[in-house]
Length: 72
Image (cartoon, rainbow, N blue to C red):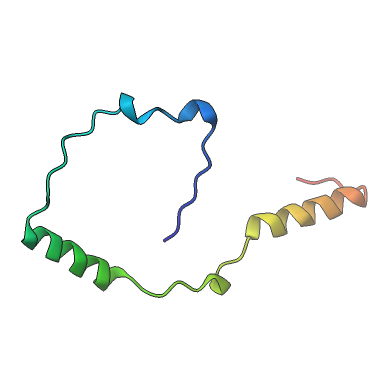
């Protein structure tokens, strides 16, 4: 899964405002479990399987409007 989110300037806070707990090293068993989960749930990413459907639909609307048709 890939997630990209654009943020506006007013949404970004200075890290000093965050209440982040002190750094604590994970236990070896927890780290091993996390790595195993990541390996089990990971698979190769192939971007050719994904299409920008939004742009395709928007282009259809633009072409209809250019022809003077009403868009619902």
